[in-house]
Length: 125
Image (cartoon, rainbow, N blue to C red; front, side, top):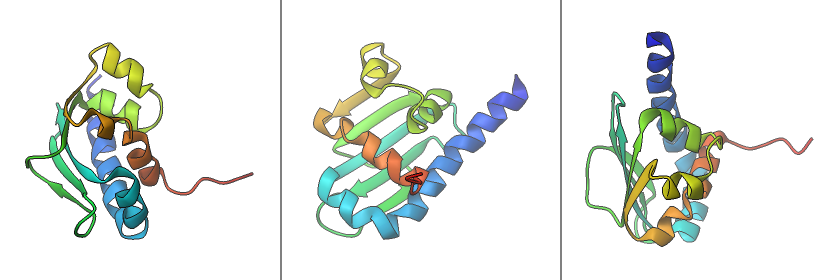
């Protein structure tokens, strides 16, 4: 169990690292489609608070820490990994209370676009 738990912690950090690395290339396009700020509160993670700025003014960025955002997403570390990897349906997770959102709910509907850039380009084969 401990090994799995540590791996999950590492995975969420890797997802945020991949997202941050993808922002320079994909951030402007994502900024146009999302157009807001998102705070992530990942409970049980080594680094639980992240702030994603995809507002239409300024440079897209991802930083550690807590800031006021248009949308705040609270989710457990293991469920964040499932959601980001596409192994959990976002709407079902919300309806079951697995993920809690506060603020502009319309931004929550755009989260999959955010997670998709962290996965990188997909092969068309």
